[in-house]
Amino acid sequence: NKTAVHFSGECHTRCIEVYENCTNAFILWISPGFAALSLIVLGLIAKFIKPPKDFFNHHVMGVMNFVAFFLFIFWIYASFAGAGNGFTGDLVAFGMSMVFGVGVIMTAVLWKDIANNESEQLIEDVMEHHKAHLDLIKGFSVLALSPLIILFLAVSILHQIVRKITYPCRGRSLEHKGYLSQEASEFVEDFKSWNHSQVLTYSVYCGIGYIGFAVLASKFTTLFLSWLIGYTSTMDIFAVTGIVVGVGMMMFMLPPVPGLPIYLTSGIVLVSVGTKSFGVYGAITYACFVSWALKLFACAVQQCVIGGLLGGSISVKQAVAINSDAVRAMRLVLSEPGITSGKVAILVGGPDWPVSVLCGILGLKLLPILVGTLPVIAIIAPTVLSGSFSYMSSIETDNDGLKYPWAGTVGTVVTTATAAVMFVFTISAAGTITTTLETRKDDLAQLEYDKEVKDANEKAGRIAAVRNRVQVWSNVPCVFKMSLILSVLLMMTSCYILVLFGTDCFEDYDIMFSIRENLDGDWTNLVKPLGRLALLFCVTSYFFFFVFEMWLKSATRKELKSSTVEETLPLTR
Image (cartoon, rainbow, N blue to C red; front, side, top):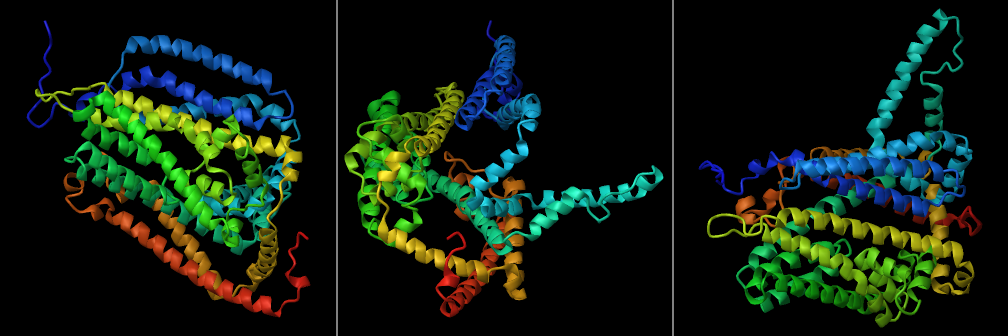
C-alpha cells in the first residue's frame, strides 16, 4: 500500500516548507562533499605557500589522517540517514564551519613550531615584501574593522584601570602607567605614523568597490537577466539565440560583469525555449555550444578591438602596469606556443574583460590566445547545467507534480562543482605568475620595457612625490580633513548596513523570478527603504571625497609649479 501525502488548500504541492523538515538529513548526506571541498581549499593554499622548511609536513599528515578517518565514519553514518530535498543556508554554514574547524586544528597543531620559527622576523619579511600595498591594507582595515579596533581600545582602557587598582593591593608596580595598555599604546603610536590621507582615501575606494561590484553589479545584473528570461519565453529558438548573443556581447564589453551570469542565463533561456526543438538534453548541449562560441567571440572582440585600439594609449598601458613584473610574467606565459597549463590557468582563471583586453594591449597573436581559452568549457558547461537544472526543477506535470524532482539538488551540486573549478583555475593563475617570477628570471630580463611608459611612469612618480608631500596630514586644512573623515564614516556606515542588514536592504530576488510577480511590476522595488538609505550614504560619502580630491589636485598643481626638479624626485630614487 502506498501512503498518500495530502496538502492543504493553502500549500501548493511544491511548498518549500514541506521539504525544509528534511534539512538535517540532507546536511548529513552532503557534508562529506563540503568537507572534501574544505580540504581541497586547504591543500591548494598549502601548495602555493610552499614553506621553506619541512617541519610542517608530519603535522599536516597527522591532521589529514584524522580528517580522513572522521570523514569515513561520518559517511557511514550519513549513508543510513538518507537524503532530503533542497539546499539551504544551513549547508553553507556547515561548509564554512568545516573550513574554520580545519583552520583551528592547523593553528593549534602548528602554533608552537610557528612561534619557535622566528615569527617576528617572518612578519617583518612579509611586511617588507608587501610594503607597496600596506596603505591599501590599512585602508581596508579602517573600513572593515573600525568597530573592532574601537572595542579593542575600550577593553584596553578597562584593563589598564583594573591594573591600576589591583596592582598596588598585590604589592606589584605598574610598568606602563598610561591610559592604555602597553600593546594598545604601541598600536596608537604606530597609527600616528600612518599616511592618514592615503589610508583614508583607500578606505573610500574599498567601499566604492564593494558597493559597486559586490552589491549593485550583482543585484542589477540578476534583475536584468530575469527580465530577459521572461521577455524571450515566447520566442523561437533562433530569435532567442540572437538576443542572447547580442546581450551577452554587450555584457562582456563591460569590465565589471563576469561571464558566469551570462552562461547561467543561457542555460535557462536557451533550454526553456529549445526544449521543443531539440529536447531537454539536446537543448542543454546547444546552450553549452552557444555559450562557448560567445565566450570565444567576445575574447576576440575584446583583444582585437578594445585591446588593439587602446594598445597605443600610454595612459592605458600605464593603468594596466605593462612594465610591472606580474604583467611581464603574464606576457611571457601567454606568448608560449600551444596550450600549456600556465596559459590555460591565466586565460580561464583570470577576469574575462581585463585578461582579453590586456592580451590586445600586449600585442599577442589572437589564434594562440583563443586556442588557450578553449578549456574554458570546463567552467561554461557546469554553469550552463546549473541554469538548466534550475529551469528543469520548475517544470510541472499535468498532475501538478514536478517532472524533474531531482533537478534542484543536482543543480546545487553542479553549482558547487562550478565554484570549485573556478577556484582551482584562479589560484592556479596566481601560482603560475608567482612561479614564473621565481624560476624564469633570465627570460623575463630579455623582455624589453616600454620606453614611453617608462618615461611616463617617471613623470607620474614626480607628481606622486609632490602629491604625497601635499597630503601629509599636518599640511591638510582642517575643513578638508573633516571632509575626508566624514566621507570615510559615511562609507563605513553604508557598507555595514549593506553587510549586516542585506535582507532588509534588497528584496530576495533570483534569476528565475519575475518583475511582475515578485516586485509588483516595478523594478525599483528591488531596493528597500533601508537599502536606499545606505546608497544615499554612499553617494554623500563620494561627494565629500570628491571635495577632498579636488582640493588635493589643485594643491598638487600649485606645489608642482613652485618645486624644483630635485624636490619632485621620488624618495625611492
